Amino acid sequence: MTTARIHSMETFGSVDGPGVRFVLFLQGCRMRCRYCHNPDSWKLDGGEEKSAEEILNYALRYKSYWGTQGGITVSGGEPLLQIDFLLEFFKACKEAGIHTTIDTAAGPFTREVPFFSKFEKLMQYTDLLMVDVKDIDPERHLDLTRVKLDNIIDCLRFLDSISKPVWLRHVLVAGYTDDDGEILRFKEFAQSLHNVRKIEVLPYHSFGMYKWEALGMKYSLADVEPPSAERVEQVLNMLDAQSYPDYK
Ligand code: SF4
Image (cartoon, rainbow, N blue to C red; front, side, top):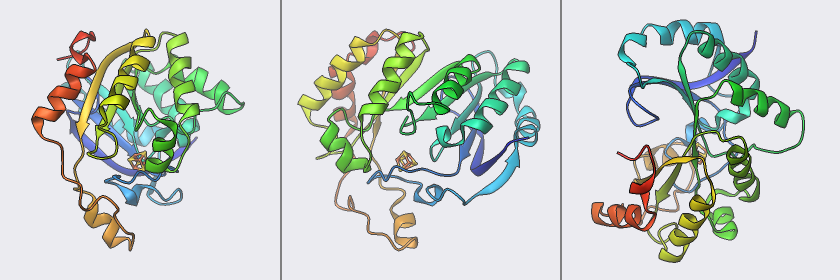
């Protein structure tokens, strides 16, 4: 039996996929996003260890709230770093008839084995992926997250090739990820895919700043203000977000 390292769990998630969801946040991430609101989830060997069976039994207590649309989302940290657990967990979820979603930044994706063969198998048990594209420009992506963009784009191309439904997410950070030219490049990229069901624009916030300070790290975006609701709306329009089937 494979165990997972857990950061936390949310029993009534409403922003991490369709409907009401049980959200499992896995521990561990190799990205270093400047705006990360959970830097306490980075440490690969932190968190609490639990088995797939234990988590599923706990999540099932909330099944009656999920209705026809809801289900289970695994987020992070970076969930794909614990792909062996995900495979076992989502297989059991599908056997129990549960809608499954992965909320990922796709950083660990590679076409090399053993990861790729596990990922292909995992897709058989995954209904939806929410993929956070931090920045469509490779250099800016590297500056923002300290990891490369190319394998993330490759992951999205692969998901397109197998027609796996995807929601794209983009965090809007003034002076970093809200440049009109980049937004239009992101739009072009999204439109080149055939499996995108929704695009979400998430306004940057600094709620996690205190965690950086508590961990003794410098928060580099301390002077950045959240975008206005009007700017978020404008970016959604630029991306033609209303044209995607799951847009609400
Ligand atoms: S991918 Fe998510 S958890 Fe990892 S550093 Fe970025 S925001 Fe934080």
